[in-house]
Length: 160
Image (cartoon, rainbow, N blue to C red; front, side, top):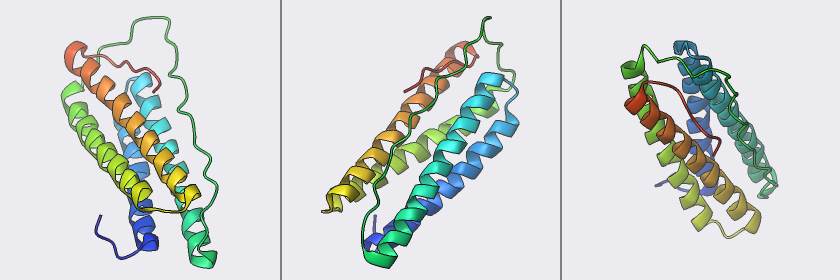
């Protein structure tokens, strides 16, 4: 990441979270399958939480130069269906959405890992490390979804 200082870097990743929130919200509207819709809605909420936390961090850094105490968030359990999930009729178009999301999650994971490695403040290091781990979990979840849609044409995921 080539930003001049920490506050600028936080603004960049915060904007990425805003875009991710919006993109997942739009993806949820395009999916008919309840499991897929729930997945994208939950990812949108998760990224909105990141955005809120980064906004608080940005304010704190600007006001006092202090990091906040970041409380990580657990991804909710996927809904349980009594019957086998229905085949996804729009699997090919959804593959493109999921593929793009996988790439963005991988970039976010690296951006937070880079921030963690360049931050000497322990709270900052812990926060960015946790954010990187959460983005990695989203990457894994989406990779699993991509694989099941690709190979079986149906939605399936396990909470990271």
